[in-house]
Length: 434
Image (cartoon, rainbow, N blue to C red; front, side):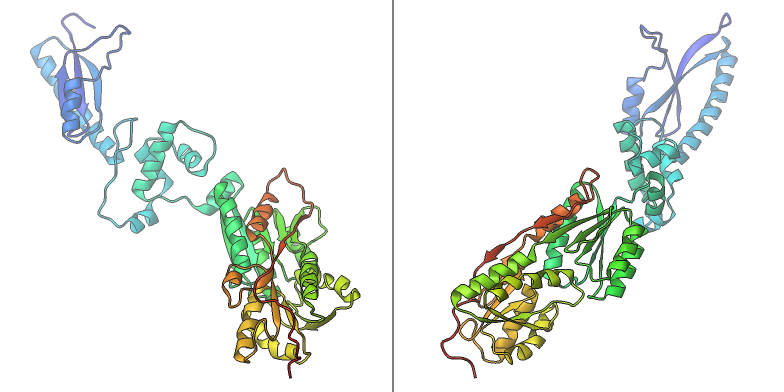
């Protein structure tokens, strides 16, 4: 510094772009960039952020000081305007951006560059924070999230998937969204997914194997894993889906494939338990209302009749389906065989059976006993309460989710239920129905 020159401390407030002068405050470490408490208080009172401090060496003469001050003022007024355009002055917390523009319109135009400018970081840092990539400091992460919220920025899901190689989404395909059994399974899967910061995409296929196949193939393109609940498609089609999906898990279906895991209910044990219960009450002639012909689980149910039939029970198989309406429609045909009891493919069908029997003026269980399978939530609230084979659908969903974790093998997991006896089953009537 030349003789006669003066060392002055200036600061520029972010609230008004004003240039101020003061004495330098030199600490023990030689740090000249000390904040002026008075300036800081003044600036906060006006609603601004931090102040910018700088040192300037000016000529000793009076004119030199004045001229230098004017030049510095021009340069920092320009700096103030540039910094104001970015919306923030410091590396501290981001100031909230307010706009009268609707949030939806801002979000439609906001880009990652807007977030980076407002948070005063690089676009790469914004990407790391919002995609959950390499960690950054908590302070920087908070600034980025606040900035993204203020400008209404939402990352492109497809771009994030490409960046991290994962969509954090699992697709779930069910044959009938109206069936409470599948709704309960979805609850279990969704709860497990949310606990690990994953999402679920759900597709219903109305019991159509072709629609099921198309939905599964399409979902496999976008999700990290695919869960098929009681799939109806053929085995060759199922193998195609297994090849297309990153990971495939089946509920109530088994496929011999090295990359496919399965969770199945031992329905044959449930049917056997229902037959033993009805036989203990004195029933000898039982109608079974069959499920969909493409349902693997129906084949397993029918396995359960082998032992009772060998023990002398008469099992009459009646085509039906899996819905409440299917149950209503199958009753009349079933009654032509004069059974004393009916076992239904599931509780949904059983509710339809109860409705139709009531229309026909038949008493349950006075004239005929009715039993279901699955223990759907409504089973305990029918009139009369429905005897059924209870299966924990929440446990099914949880077990299926565990199949997606790398540490679990693709071996088949078997889930067993329990017999729940309610008022819909009783000893057969002494007089046969006419």
